[in-house]
Length: 373
Image: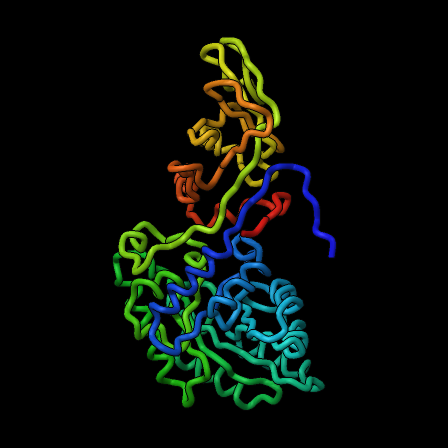
């Protein structure tokens, strides 16, 4: 198969060995026989779902989790064997496709079960389901023990369906205050006590809970998301991590133009930046259409192992950097990652953008090719 060729020097570099090591470290940390559900939704948080899924499975993950039917079908086209779980809501019309492709769906509504049942009468394989408990997240899920018992009984009495799991999601597992977290745990465990027979997989711990909460909350499996990519769920979790995380995402480009401008010369749209003295300006072929949004103006990049600021407004396809001297065309520019002993982290970008680190690799668009180590 011919490898696609990219001519623009802008690229995201994904270190698959780092991802594998993060999974291996978690596996060693967990209780024996606890499975790892590798969360590869949103194109593996912008890292590339197929490559990351392959690396995670090789390192010991046994289940792949996504958010949508389309993501699940894309993963199934590349992986025949492993379980695939859709964490979000799926339309009733997808039920027969899920059964055929052995994709596990999330269930949380009795009427959905009844509607889906009518579409499954001709299917050879049962539709596998995981019941979602809304223990305090407020998104989707069962909100009472009675509602759970009714849904459980409906699934158990319906042909062509199999209850394979039950789960919840913690809203504050990454915070030091445990009040809401403890309330969620109590409600989830009440729900577990209601159902007559525990299904194959009980899972509640997201990344933060997997790393820093009571080991009994690991149940049968944990869902490993943000820290599989080497990022901490929060500054609090980062301060008490049980093992170091290895970041997997770097963003690089090159200088495509270097010029000297005079004191008082403007740079960029709106002429918002004016040279304070005679200086050198470098142009990088990356912009807000690539995910380097305009609010990142002033953010520093690495050139020649030194930090240099983006100046002027970031354009759709390009941005400009203040240079201390003339550099050759083709000089490497690191926007996220390391050069020597100096680094620019995803967390630094997140702070600059007043957001969380999860968002940063996700906003780097598909126009930026992912290359893999």
